[in-house]
Image (cartoon, rainbow, N blue to C red; front, side, top):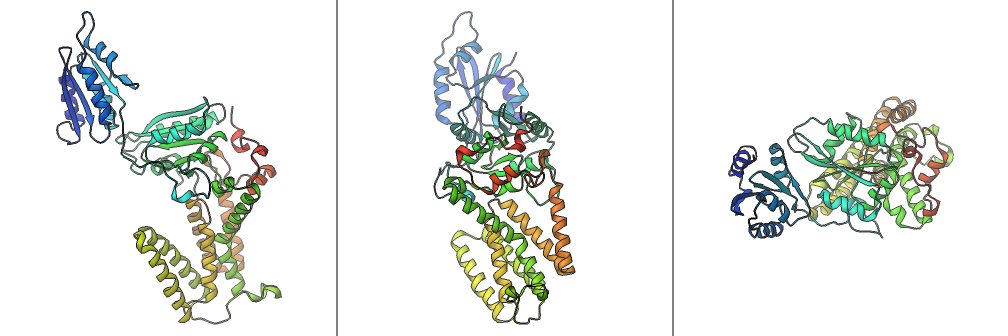
Length: 471
C-alpha cells in the first residue's frame, strides 16, 4: 500500500525534493490521515492549489469510506488522474502537475500555468489585414487557437513524448478521415523511435529525427506561427506537429512550391493575391538565377542580342567579376547575420553604414563594379521576398553553388549546375511526397492553383498530393 512517507523518500531521490528550491511539498492531515501535496514553483497556478487545499482540509471522516476515496471525491478540479505506477510521478511533477499522496492512493491534478507571452502576430508572417494572434510557447494555448478555427469533431491532437530525459510534449494534429492514416502512423512511429536524452531545440531537434536529411539544405517540412495557416493545412489533409516550448508548428508533407505561399495572398482580393504571388515567384527566380546569368553574359558579351548589349561592366577592374560577386553576396549574408545579433536600436545604423560607406566606397575606389552591387542587391531582395526563411537560405546556397560552377566552366557550367540542382530536387521525397509537385509529376490543375490565387468557392478542397492516400 502506498504511503505518503514512501513517496517523500522516492521524490527526494528521483526529483530533487528538498534539494531543488523550486520543488515543494505541503503536508496536511485530512480525515485524520497524512496527505502530502507536491508541486513545482513557477509551473503551477497557485490559486488552484489554494482552492484544492481548502477543499481537502474541510473533508470529514466517514465510516466505511477510505480517505483516498474521500480525497478523490473532493478534488475540485476537472483534470484529476489516479496514478498506480510511482515511476510516473517525477515526469508528472516536472510537467507542472501537482501530485497528491494519501494512504493507499496517488493522484495528479493538472493545474499547469507555464510562464510565457500572450498570443501576438509573428514577425516573419505579418499581414496587412487579418488575425493578429499567433502561436506561443505553450502547447495547450496553441492547440486551443487551432480548435477555435476548426470546430469539427474529427480534429485530433494525440499527445506523445520525445526525449528520454526531457519528456517533451509533442501533439500530432490531424483531421481524422481526411489526413492519410499511413502518414499519421508513420509520424507517430518516428516520434516513438526518437532515442536521445533531450530535445532542447524542441521542434528542430524532432525534425532532424523525423526527416534524417543530413546535409540537404532544402527544407522538407514547413513551419508556421499563424493559427489560421495551421488550420488551413489541417483541413487540406496535412499532419501537424505541435511541440511544447516552441511557437512554430511543423507541417508535413511540404513541397517546394508550398513554401512560397503566404497568408497575405489570401487576405487580399483574388486579383491582388495573384499579383503578389506572381511577384514572389519572380523574386524566387531572381534570387537563384539572376547573378549566375548576369555573370555568363558579362563574361560572354557575344551571346547577347543587340537590344541587350548594355548588360555588362563598361569599366575594367583588377578583381575578376566572379570574385566580386562572391564577396558582395557573402557580404550581404554577413550583414543579415550581424543584424540578427545587433540590438534593435543599432541595427538600422549598422545597415546604413554597410550600405552607404562600404558599398559606395568599394565602387569609388574601383574594387567593385557598380553593376555587381546592383544585381547582388536585386538577388538579395528576391531572397528576402521568399516567405519561407529556410527556403530562402537554401536558394542562396544553391545560387553560390551555381555561381561557383559557372565561374569555373562558363556557360556550360551554368547549364550543368542547373541540371544538377534540378535532378537533386527531383529525387527528394519527404514522407513519400514528390518535392517538386505539381511540376514533377506534372499536374496542370494543381500547378494553376498554386500559381493563381483562386476564389474560395473555386477551391477543390484536399490537394491531390494529400488526397491520394487519405481514407
